[in-house]
Amino acid sequence: DSHWSYEDPGQWAKHFPACSGTMQSPININTETTIFSPQLRPIQLSGYSLPASQMLALKNNGHTVVLKLPESLAITGGYAQQYRAVQLHLHWGSPSNPGSEHTVDHKRFAGELHVVHYNTKYENFEAAVTQPDGLAVLGVFLEVGPRENPYYQQILEHLRSIQEEDGEVFVPGFNIAGLLPDNLHLYFHYNGSLTTPPCLESVKWTVFNQTVMLSKEQMSVLVSSLQTDDNHLLMNNFRQDQSLHRRWVLASFE
Ligand code: BO1
Ligand code: ZN
Image 1: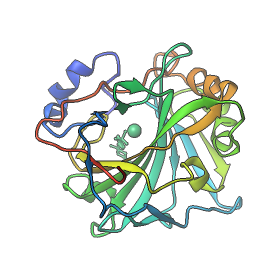
Image 2: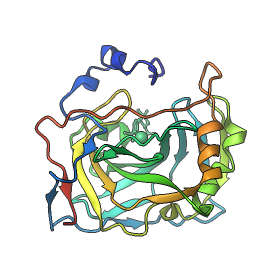
Image 3: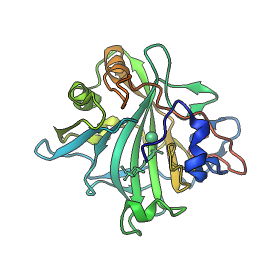
Image 4: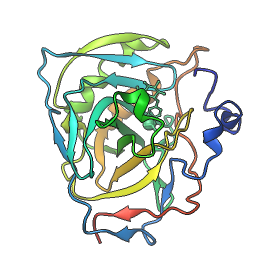
């Protein structure tokens, strides 16, 4: 699964045919054509506050930085079914360009956090990833603001020690919910895919309307700390937006 790169997304479908499907992610969210759905309830998280004694693996996999999450974290509201957390990771641009995957009215944000979960009715992530209701990913837009964000700092302060591909470090647990916006009521929802190969169309996406702020210094640590296999800086790890085809985007708010 490592013979793909952000340099040639046109080649992805050669090895991973799902990448040319009709329910791909990310998408541009056109706020003029979303459908207000009052039955979309606030996203409810449980077990997201972890003690510092619980160490978590943080890894540079050559495509992103991944924080492995214990299965005790779960989404218990907002979705019709229960989903257990697996990992979270980030997408970003370069020192001069934003790098979120989703865009809103064609605005690209500085970066994007993805918290990946699988439906508890399946045995594990591998079983769920091939099912249309298998995964729930929470997407959070990152923007540059005036203050250091202490929750993101729990990840960012370790990036220097995993600058090489496959570098891994164990970091103390913290309140993972602090990485998400305060307001979990306002979001967009649609059916899509993994945004990287194998691009499987198994993701019920939630993209929050409220953004999260990182300082300018934190954003520059994110975009300039990690390397890929060929010792180049790991930058611009976002996919271009994909056609909606027959899909609609729901909004929890008017
Ligand atoms: S994303 O959230 O749509 N950007 C996304 C994209 C790819 C994966 C996860 C989320 N990939 C999978 C790997 C599996 C791995 C799993 C959990 O992530 O294909 O091998 O087990 O880390
Ligand atoms: Zn992602």
